[in-house]
Image (cartoon, rainbow, N blue to C red):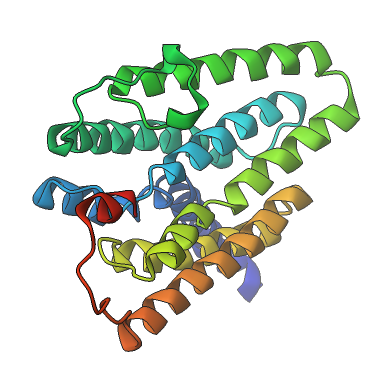
Length: 253
């Protein structure tokens, strides 16, 4: 009787927790990029942020949406992908505007050039939109033709989450190459770590497809590796070269 008397409180409380968790899944993924976005706008310098992070997330979330057509999963995860795509386009718009404004080389590079050497290093935000739409169209057409194949659908889901799991790898590689995390927002990485931990727990507790749980665990490991870089480079900074560096060499780094 006592348990039944508490139902009037426990049922709406459980519903409220479910709503909060769903809202955190939809919008929590974009929160880490707010401090990075503000830092870029304030400093007018986007060198510390790898735009390949945007590429990884755009591909991963487009594939995840296509996976939903073959195997429906929870709606918050679908909306999370839509919100993340819009956020990455905003990040690309800002980074492109800042980079072009600071770039000495005025030669325009566009998606229509089909130059692999300048892939994802174009001079206009419209080129990134064209590339995203082209990828979506091709991937969507292939999915439409193969949607009845269970093997294809499961492979599509695996590719989506594997791509998302590689989210931090461009930033990890950039930090390693420069032996520095200067320009990278530590708040962003801390939010990545906490968000990915929450997301992985959400996947496990709600019985999401196995691909999602694997993705979450891989992301947490990459996040921890980036935090390890931030600690290591802060306590053991790279020693300056004993001789002056040629400007052209410095530009190439």
